[in-house]
Length: 170
Image (cartoon, rainbow, N blue to C red; front, side, top):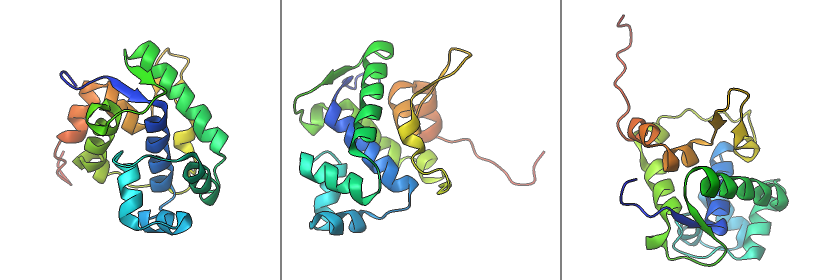
């Protein structure tokens, strides 16, 4: 992310988290749109950062996915602290245009990457994205893949260009 802006918003972090929870639980965008009384394309624009996420919509989506809005906010605050303190990002509490929001752009690139598309979802680990970031005893930090993509160039490269595996080869 050499020339990408390292700037985002707390709302963008929440949008990324909601999208990750939705994917973890195997919920389609059309179902979320139905919950909030919008078209699937309207919800897609929210997840893409092209439309704002009103507080009422945030609460309704969280409740519909059986996730406490406060859990999403607490996780967003932890990721905001990590991004700003450990990775040199600026995290704003104001609105930011999509073209200026580095996290949303990185998230879109991650979700479209071969590495992300090849992940086999584990629907038994509900809410795992909301448990992060995790500070390990060996001083490492475990991040949800979408956030790791935004801060770790080596991981990003692996997601964009995964190594080819030949089945049965030694």
